[in-house]
Image (cartoon, rainbow, N blue to C red; front, side, top):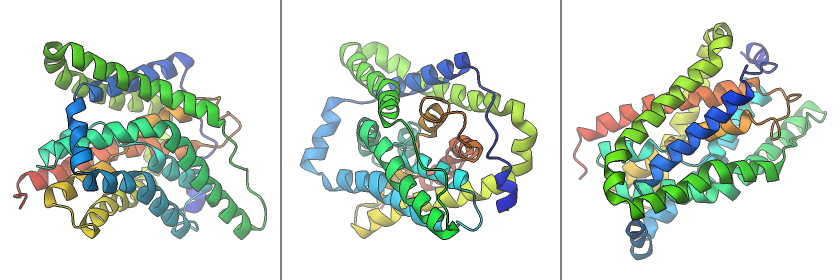
Length: 315
């Protein structure tokens, strides 16, 4: 398995600069759609009942990255450093936008879900670069000590990463909130169509990006599928476990499970396709495959869990 995954590392997805710009626009469009569902009044509940919100943020920002770090250590004999870094990158990303729909579908706390998505996205401007550099650096040091030699150090442009996250996530989020505030009627008509179309566009873009490497994708999908399956299950389990440990309501447990298990892997792809952050000399093929497949798989797993919970009473 390890030797097979090594063959992924040299792969660079054949993505033109114009294609990268399209991906950036689509992700910004996705975040604008997310912001249309945000109302300032929703944040009042955070002040009056902060416990679920705090536990949710801890689950996303601290628990998932740290649990991912332990997982890549446990699998270090079976996965390559590139694959491991892809898992760490996904864990460093904020919650995915489709989580709000899934939470509503599963009879969870939709207001909490929207608040967590918005907050984790805002914090991601700082948290995503920090978590990736921190946990990624620890992993590189661990592997280097075990191998007896220093592997390729983790050298990324933190300022460029910060700038990219801010432009792609922060600005559309603010614009969406303002649009919803001043154009409420238009927002109600546009909200659902924008969210559905943006998700379909993202899936289509992933397929197009990998079309030139389709044979390799099919050849190694079994390994990638298993790794993402385990990682995603860990994310979902972390959310549910932490919510249970703090004795949150069943409604909030469902919410934290989905919010922790659904990550904005689209942001991960945007970062990976940016040569100023990940220069071409870096072997990131494993990272690309992990991040792209996560973006597809978490929709499948999230909708499956939501469909199951939608048939179960909350209490």
